[in-house]
Image (tube, rainbow, N blue to C red):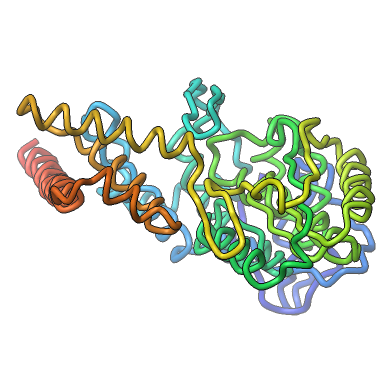
Length: 415
């Protein structure tokens, strides 16, 4: 294990490690690396180095602690999260301990596995949530540094699980294409990758990361995180998944078989002027996926947009107008019905219900469904009342957490 944490700033050594000027001694022993991908190899691509020292820096670890703690103040049953409180109280010690864990070889703990119902996809998902300390803090510390590296060369319309690249970006793109380019949107190829996270192998992720990073200590940390699989629920998984598919995005863009293309995680929406070219492109996509241990789901479709409206990221797209999906509209009506039933009985409206109705109502504001919006909400200021409930909950939550932290501090002083 590594005991010397001094990293030199002198001449670069052949494998990317820091070498102290004049001493000729290397302060990191590569025989401690666990990843089989941490071997010297000639890769003709400009890669990024000197990342490990940034990952274990005080500023980066403190930012990771802040990012994790701000969303982990309370458990599901509104019990205070003692782990978050403990980390905030001993932040300086935790930063030093996290650095030591990373340098000496991070060993992930067994995640908490739960099965949850995904209402939008209408299926159950197995969620593997990493242990909060130290796993989640180390995951955030790693991604904070690798984010700029992985986004370099990312397709402009690669959306999903990336800040400022959500459903709105994909929706606006498809709306613009359907309105302004009639010839280039005559046909659509839509499909998604079969069991993407379950099928994505750690070796494929490491091969991709090795093309972006030349810091072998960072590669070793990535391998320790992904060697047990790309799990739904881990903060790192969504970033690695998007990064692995970047070469596929470039293949589709440079094929010349399509006019427009947007990808939302593993869902592909491709528009073109020629059905024959889209069939050729589908074979290219399947070939690339097979080479990387993945598979295109069998329910892919190629159809003319004049006979059937393209359907993506929750909306259906026509020439100059956009409609919401029928089953999404049905869920909005049911959520509003449950809310009005609570109000009629005089019962307290849970904040989760209020937030759900606000979120679903926001979907209607991005499509041509004004009449439906007015008919559902009936002008009774539903949104104003719901926003008051959410604001009140957030304010009380902050005050309650501050009071809890003060009580803990008083107990420490008395004890």
